[in-house]
Amino acid sequence: MLVEVKVPVLSESVAQATLLSWHKKQGEYVERNESLIDIETDKVVFELPAPMAGILVKVIKGDGATVVSSEVIATIDTAATVTEIQSLPVTKSATASSIAQTMMPAAKKMVTEENLKADEIKGTGRGGRITKEDVKGVITKPATGPTVAAKPGTDRPEQRVPMSRLRMRVAERLVQSQSTAAILTTFNEVNMQAIIDLRTRHKERFEKEHGVKLGFTSFFVKAVVAALKKFPIVNSSVDGNDIVYHGYYDIGIAVGSPRGLVVPIIRDADRLSLAEIEMQIAGFGKRAQDGKLTIEELTGGTFSITNGGVFGSLLSTPIINPPQSAILGIHATKDRPVAENGQVVIRPMNYLALSYDHRIIDGREAVLSLVAIKEALENEMGLLFEA
Image 1 (tube, helix red, strand yellow):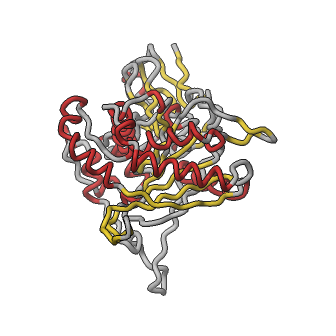
Image 2: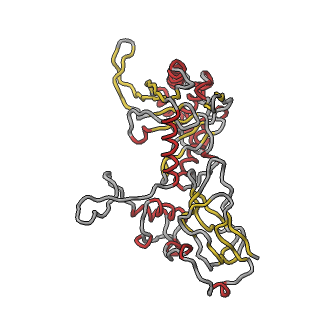
Image 3: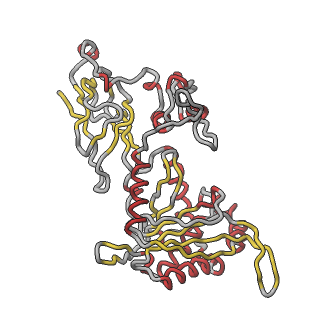
């Protein structure tokens, strides 16, 4: 029996996908649910399993092909044997190097994204398979960019690399945000001493009880929710000529991944404890590095938080993630002199930046909501700490 291998139904926000690399060659036997190919959308990379066991008799779409929902990309013969298939011609688009077939899925993604040559990577995994760590070992990115060959007759090197589908989507959304929203940014500073002291007192007990480290982001999530409850317009979005007020708090957390910046969503953040928020953030970070975030985890959101401070940023103006209307930028905490009660003292200070859509959010609401975030972090940590 011939079984069609189809692209899964993509979400409404995802029109197309790209076939990255086939794990099986035409004419090879595959087990049911064995990974056949990596597929990249503008949000995630996922593995497509074989729907049935049998021989991969025909690969219709090869590596790099653009596909849509439910498109047939291959055929499996559940009744054929390997000997019967050996004489079949193999299409050029379906072939892959034998080295590529010995790579782990995560390693394949990195090789594709970093434009590396698989035959130059030595595998240390089981049976000589190339692992993600093997690929990381050969990736070198100097500050001036990748090392590339110079143009003939010149000493001015250049390299042209196609954008990944994720990078193209990020670029599209950022331009959309800048061109459709009236973006302004308001700034404030927060004294992080209360959070630092609270975290120091409770972090060991917290980790023992919940099995996850107590970070700083969960405090910011709690403070943001407290501010959004006071100023619902900051948690709203624009839909045509309507303002949509969201009665829930789905907070996007920007995290880095090998493919670029992604923003998974913490659903109903107002109902979660610090421990539950930390568990979700830790899970997002791990799945982002492994390329395992789902489309559902990256879709939606009513407000976002981005932390440039982990990279050393002192101040920035974050761009709104449409259709949201505001985003909070967190930065590096630095000891700075501040005035308290007429005295100059040193305190761990963090600059906060709130970018907002001035079409629906007035300056008053933007400024006061950022002040509410600041006050929650400095003065209400006892209320926010729900271990």
